[in-house]
Image (cartoon, rainbow, N blue to C red):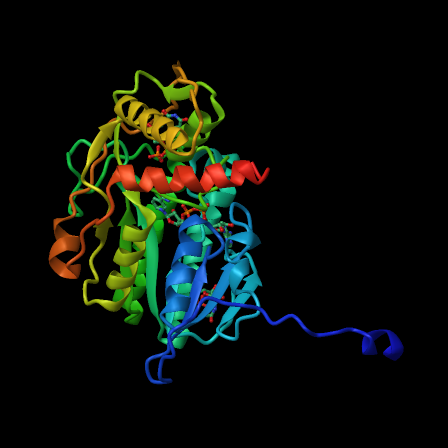
Length: 350
Ligand code: NAD
Ligand code: UDP
Ligand code: UDP
C-alpha cells in the first residue's frame, strides 16, 4: 500500500481565476442553496471573485457539478450534496436560497417534491438563518403574480394564481415560501430579502431544460423547427443573467426588505421573440463562416395549461432602492448564449 502511494506524483497545481483578497472583516461566509444550477453557478462565480467564502448546497436535481467544477479545490470554496428538505447545520453570515427547480417541465415532473422543496427547504434555511443570525435572501418569482390581471406587475399586486393547476406546485410553493420568510421576519427578527425574478436566460442554462430561450436557440442552431406554444401572442420580458446577479447582490447588501422585482421591462410576444432568435442565430452562423445557414421553420404546438398571457416587470422599486437597472440588451444576451451553445455543439457536448 505504502509503496504504491509513494509513487504518486503530486505535480498538478489547480489554476483558479484571481479572487479578490478581502480583509477578514469584510470576507463573508456565504451559503448558496441551488448553487450548482443556472443562476446559482453565476452567483458563485461573482461572490468567489469578490473574495468571499462560498459553500454550495445542492442535490443536483436540475443542476450539475460541472457548472461550478472550476472552483473545486479553491480554499474559499466548498460543495455539499444535500437536499434542502432536510435540516442542515453550518455557520454562515449570508444565505442565498435558490434551491428549487425553475423550468415548467422540471418542476412539474414531481409536483409534490417541488412544493416540499419550497416549503420545507425554505423553513429549514430560515431556521438556519434564525440560529446563525445570517441575512437570508430567497429567489422568488414573477410566477407569484400568476396569470396577471394587472400589467406591468408591481410588487403591490397580489396576483392571480390557480392553486390547483399544474403550475401551482411552483407558484404556490413560492408564495408560501414568501409567507414563511416574512413570518420569520416578524416573529423572530430574521433579516430577510425577497427577490421576485422575471424570466432570465444566459450561458449554462441546461440546454434541455425546456424553457423558451434555450429551446429556441438550440432549435435554431440545430436547424430544427422552432416550437411556439399556442398562437405566440403571450408575452414575456427576458433579462440576461449578469443583470440578475447584479440585482441579487445589491438586494442582499442593501436595506430594502420588501419584495423586489428583478427583471426586464422590454416585452416581447413569444412569436416576435422566436423571429428575433432566428435572425440572431442566422447572423452568428454567417459570422462564423457557415455559408448558407438553414432558415428554420417556426411551428405551433399546444399551449400549456395556465400559461400566463402577459408578463412584464415593473422595476421602479429596484431602480429606486437598489439603483439597479438592466444593462444587457436581449440581442447581446442571445448572441452570447448562442455562441456558448455553438461551442458546446462543436465540442460534441450537445
Ligand atoms: P435551476 O433548475 O438551474 O437551478 C435550481 C438548482 O436547485 C439546481 O442546481 C437544483 O439541482 C437545485 N435543487 C432543486 N431542488 C433541490 C433540493 N430539494 N435540494 C437542494 N437543491 C435543489 O434553476 P435556475 O433558473 O437557476 O433558478 C434558480 C432560482 O431562481 C430558483 O429558486 C428559481 O425559482 C428562481 N427563479 C429563476 C428564474 C429564471 O428565469 N431562471 C425566474 C424566476 C425565479
Ligand atoms: N434548522 C436547520 N438548521 C439550523 C437550524 C434549524 O436546518 O441550523 C431547521 C430545523 O430543523 C427546523 C427548521 O429549520 O426544521 C425551523 O427551525 P426553527 O428553529 O425555526 O423551528 P423549530 O426547530 O423550533 O421547529
Ligand atoms: N414556450 C414556447 N416554446 C417553447 C417553450 C416555451 O412557446 O419551446 C412559451 C411558453 O408557453 C411560455 C413562454 O414561452 O408562454 C415562456 O416559457 P418558459 O417555460 O421559458 O417560462 P415561463 O412560462 O415560466 O415564463
